[in-house]
Image (cartoon, rainbow, N blue to C red; front, side, top):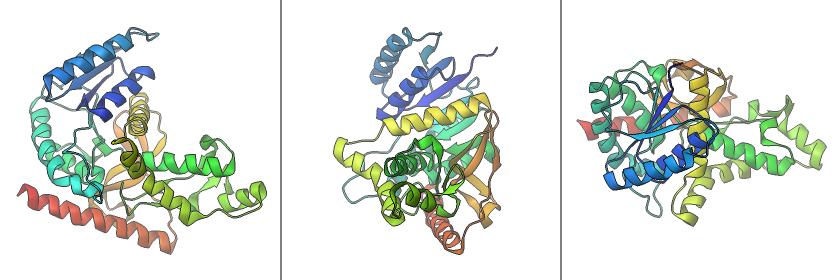
Length: 316
């Protein structure tokens, strides 16, 4: 069987944590690290190789140049243009990150990359679109982590409110991985039972849906303010998406996908439910939104589209 290879581009907090999550969950047979800082790259490789020695099956940890990628199955882009300052949003990272990504992707395509790109840097949706345009790959082979972490946060918060495991809750976020994201409450349930009905039966009271949406939206910024970065949550997100891609699970996750008419949108990437396969996105699931949810989705898409246009001006 051909060894499955995942390349992590950028070995800072997110990249290193993602590599460790992949290693511990035995996802893939080779982890390939890439970083512009050779000393940090070698240090991370050695440290992860030590951890790999404790794994029940063999996992190789190696390092390469970004262009040496023709045999890579999934390339995870975690590089960032810098840290956010107080009061900034993920969209403020666009200029610097787009410049770095604009150098990396052409090198990879020249090196013969034909795998799947997974974007795990901010602003995720706009950079996912940029990678798709630069790579020339079919849109189903370029996706971003998008709102899957936000979805997991929502399920965790609901689980705490309802005293039930998050795996039993079917709830999710769609839209931008940013301030315009929103929960699709009309499609959220506990094993088919509407959340409101379950909450009343369990606790005798209604859920505060607005507060839950706000807490979900703010969690990442709270973590960032308290410890200076977010790393473990997004690392788990990367690992779960990679596992479902490599195994061809056909599980639906809410990830950032390039749309071509779905939800009435084109020429942008945005977080929507999508089925994972070994070839990338096998299907985008189009939800039947309520009128309010449709307005929220269109507003979120408009934020992304505005920044896609800003990206085009930056790169022109």
